[in-house]
Length: 241
Image 1: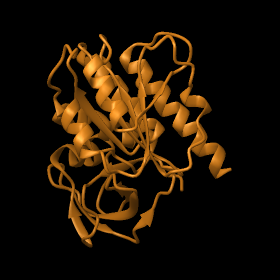
Image 2: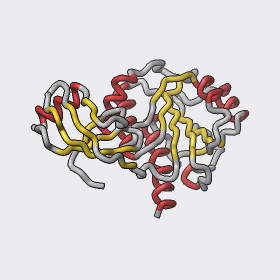
Image 3: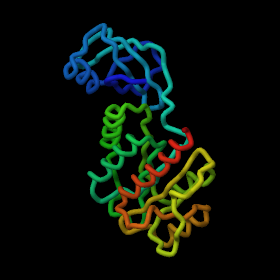
Image 4: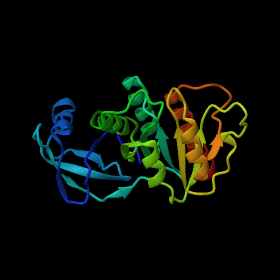
């Protein structure tokens, strides 16, 4: 389904919703929409809906929703990217933007032993993600969290998924691009600039994570994350077609 622009609202279950101040400002002041105009909304959970403006208040624009529709373009696979946050915050934002554009299921920022950054601004990253969602006209906003490596491993130990760890092991020749994904969910671990620690690698091995390479070059953390996203997205496109 094609449309020029749409707006974000986290809950499209009501017949009438009020856009946030930021979305209202964009809709009414920036794009000059008025009462009676039709716009499109997404909740970031795979749904889109046409809507008619019933109150063109630039601080609280009210719209009446039409029929809720599903956007199925996330594909056959759901990638959960678990990546160590980079020292440079701009690189994290760039990665989040590209992940949303490509379409992935979830992002976890894992704090590892060698991590140079322990915290990220999730509010800021969520704004970046919403802007990317609107710009590329997708309806999927991946949930994001900051979590320690160990807690992430414990929380996901019983999840039914293909589980991979990408790290700089020169003796390993197994490539993520050659994997034949049969399960719907994929978890991909990508470490910090200093790579995973020996204890983290052992923990992943004990939980049956498959060690893989991302090409034959040493990649920056954010580039490795993008490589993983593109690899899974390409497989999904091929399987769909």
